Image 1 (cartoon, rainbow, N blue to C red):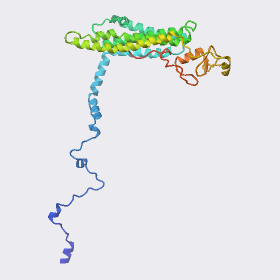
Image 2 (cartoon, rainbow, N blue to C red; image 1 turned 90 degrees about the vertical axis):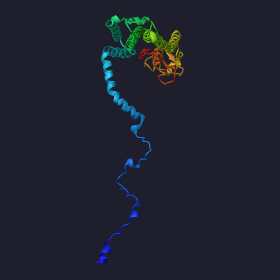
Image 3 (tube, rainbow, N blue to C red; image 1 turned 180 degrees about the vertical axis):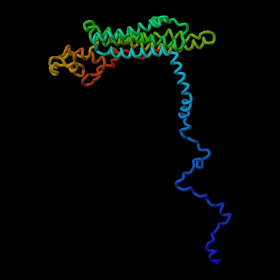
Image 4 (cartoon, one colour; image 1 turned 180 degrees about the horizontal axis):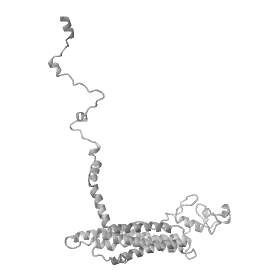
Length: 333
């Protein structure tokens, strides 16, 4: 009986040894909590603390108010915004069409679209006298705030662009006996440079009145400083435009020759056929690379490209604005 009791007894460690036993380890399928393993002074580098995440949270909080403000501003100026998009769409369409070789009927339709837009704008806002800005006077506005400034400058910029496209349409219609094909590309470039120089000067008067609108009392010093800064920045822009205009005048005044006249043996190598028009040579010209083309064909090509049509050798600098295109940049300052 005593032997059975002794065999079923369990050895219990003394009380002093229990305090030195290590804690039981967790099973392998249970991961330790990050709150237990993280050091007290260890920084948290998660995405929630990054500057981009904080900015996103701020933007998300202000996004509804930004949308409400934009909707309100768009509604208050809905007519001006609608007219801006209509004028911009007209410019894109007419600028693309004037670069295409079109029939006289098509050219007349583009010209009528341009005239209708200009006439409708001046007729609708006849009381504002927007045309005064074209000869450097301020239109009829009691005061020039930011929206008035953008309206005056933007609308007159579109008007000058439309007039520039209309002049280029006239050049397109002129026969080659009036102005040779070699000169048409240079004429387009000269018209564009003159238009950009004129558009650069138009915003000066509205900006002067806008910056000097608070010139009374304590705002006089600030208005004077702003006007000086605007004058300095504008002078660099005017200088760059004037330099480009002088360069285009020099190019137009000089008769540019792309190559030399080939011999009969050189023409026989090409079977007396131009590689551009696939017809017999008319006033053939041999480029420095050795290829031969019609004078009119290679002139029209180099008004849009800067390389030989066959070997892609560089013939000239970039033919900017020689394809009758008009700059789409909005001259706001």
